[in-house]
Image (cartoon, rainbow, N blue to C red; front, top):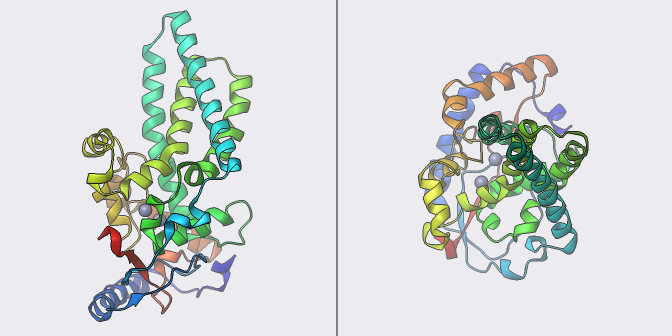
Length: 296
Ligand SMILES: [Zn+2]
Ligand SMILES: [Zn+2]
């Protein structure tokens, strides 16, 4: 794990020093950066998130094959959606047959709320630990590091391309439950929670959209706080880059950030395993968040 190569030293003091340095660097680099980049490096970086802003006028993302959906992506998403739909159907038919609606409705609501927490914990973990070579999660870690460097590309990524990794995980978890469990209350929780987690990358993409280009219903749901809002998720992409990890509704973000839950978890990981999270790292010359001039 790359974190093994990171410096090991007590966190609390240096954490604040790092953040001060990071803010200073941000102001200096934003003030000094007048560069117009002429190429778009699609290789995903492994460096930490960046505050530096440069504009790009020659991006040609429309033809970028890495953002397009393949038939394999579509097959995974179709399988994930099918597994979730079966779970929801089992919940609804079970509730209809028994006339018992209240418990499934409550468990569905609980699934929606906990899905937000689940995405926050997962997002925090892959933002801060491991690298492209990490087994199972390496490609997700790499993709999220790329997302921090080029956040706008998620709006150009096609639907199945964006969702296939989570759809695949959803399918492997939910299909066995579809086959083994008949309880409508359990399926209300599983169906809603798994569905929200699978679609969280779509909610995330919408949080990067511009209001005028989003469907009005999506904007209404974001404004109502039912989907992660553009403003709240925007804070994740600004210094100090260590908050607002939840991407379903964002309802957990305030609690988690105010109570420093992730900082506490980072301390536990550090003192138990000696591994520092990426969010403690100092900026380096590779840090550069490049903005798409066409969206500004
Ligand atoms: Zn992130
Ligand atoms: Zn984002």
